[in-house]
Amino acid sequence: MFTGVYTALATPMTPSGTVDYVALGRLLDAQLSSGVHGLVLLGTTAETPALSAAEKTEILRFCTRRVNKRVKIIIGAGTNATASTLENIRSVQSFNPDGVLIVTPYYNKPNPAGLIEHFKQAAALGTPVIMYHIPGRTGLKISGAVLAELLAAVPQLAGIKESDYDMAHVTDTAVKYAGRLSYLCGNDDLFPEYLALNASGIISAAANVFAPAFVKIYDLFTQGKPAEAFAVFAEIYPLVKACYLETNPTCVKYMLSKIGFGGETVRLPLGEVSAENKAKIDALLARANKEFFISGD
Image (cartoon, rainbow, N blue to C red; front, side):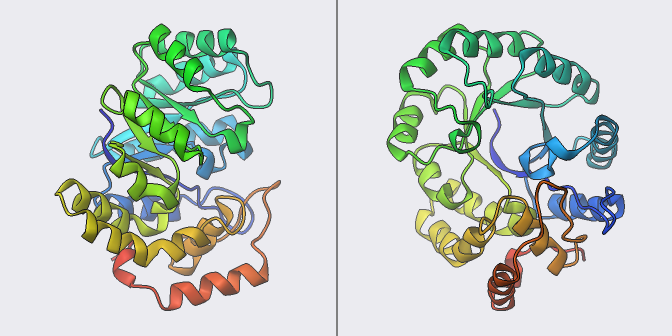
């Protein structure tokens, strides 16, 4: 099972746009010190589509060595083509991940038969597969009927990262499947709702900055203290929302730069955060409880 807080790790970059491994090492150390239960490497927050194959390999080599099995690692490997997805899974298996995150194919919007075969072939390679359902980015929403068919055809599917904002769909899915597989929240701003629906944890972009807060929310909730957990969530909620003022991970990387973890550089086609939104973020950071931030100390 995949339980707890998993940070979808950002990729710090130098002003010239190269990967900043010094900052990446500090970010990894801070995440581990914050008590996260795992890390997702080469996810959306890592700007994976803008990384070269050589950079992806080096990032995986660097991170897995630094983590040294202290927490679980999930590696993003999904594309919108089955052949390249399988190639990616095979290439990352040498890093012995605990799981691979496979997004539902985007743009080409597969029909049910194709979707099921896509995940069947991915799961057949042996590494636990977590399906990433994010209709807002892929243009594909899986209906309850198709999901039931998929899970029946691919029983070895280990989990779902659910990033749908349709809470009726989320509730229906959680009631049916949260006890059977790892049902992971993919929406930072809905973390308490997902926990109340028996989610096993979260894969979070905002945790790059606020890992201590997310860990505390999870720990309090699992200790039977939902009111205390929600109080922490309510305190960081404006900051969580600010992470998405512009396309992820632009604001997350800006926040990281403000607390000393690399620069704000992102790669095109992502661009710099607007001056207006930077000012909003600066004001929120200035009055926030610093105990909720990662620390390099």
